[in-house]
Structures are given as structure tokens and as C-alpha cells.
Image 1 (cartoon, rainbow, N blue to C red):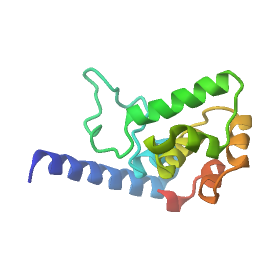
Image 2: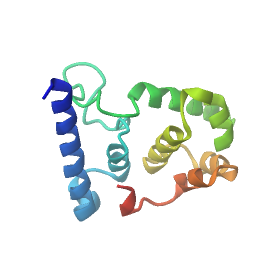
Image 3: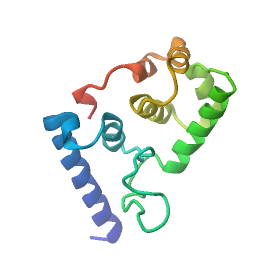
Image 4: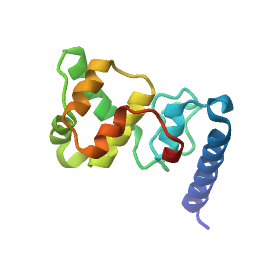
Length: 148
């Protein structure tokens, strides 16, 4: 077994441990909904303070996530810049802006993670789902156990 396969096995083991623990104990297990959503969807936990992107406390699993911190950062920077200027967008607007760089699933995961973490305000989320495909309308609902 190579080093990459071993790292992926450890990552999957950690992911399963956290997922089961969260399903049994909920928020009492010490991690929040947004973090669990990110981990269960192989999304780098961008807002977590557990690890940093650089230095001595780097996330040992950073290569294992399907959605990288750079991808999340690009999406968030655009949305944040637009939001600060008072420009709100529908999901289709964002999908068109990001074109072929990000697929629909990636946008939905990143936006759902942001919503669950309490980022942005209600006006942004209302506009975002106002004109959205059915699978993106779920971005602003409560987290269900089956999602983890």
C-alpha cells in the first residue's frame, strides 16, 4: 500500500468516526453542523480553526478533500466582494459566472457549507434561491441526518 492510499484510508476512517459520532451525539460531540457537512461531503473545512493552510499546524488530510481550499476561496471571494457592494445574485447567475471552472454540485456544497456556518445575511440567501434549480433550493434548509 502506497503512502497516498494509506493517507486516504486514514482520512476515510476519520471521516466515518466523526460522522457516526455526530449522528449519535449531535453538536455535543464538539463539532458543529457546518464542519460535519464539510467533512461528510469531502469539502475542506475552510472556516474551521482546527488546522491552518500553512505552517506547523497544516491539515494532514488537505490532499484528500475533493473541494480544495483554493476552490472554496475563489467562490467565497467573488460572493463576498459582490455582497459587500450590494450586488446579490441568483444561483444561476453564480453558475454562469463560474462557468466550467466549477460544476453545480461544487457550488451547492460550498454555498450550503457557508449557509450552515452562518455566513452572509438573509437577503443574500433569499436572492440566491429565488431563481435556482430544485437541487440548489435545499441550500437554506436545516441540516438533516441523512446529509451526513
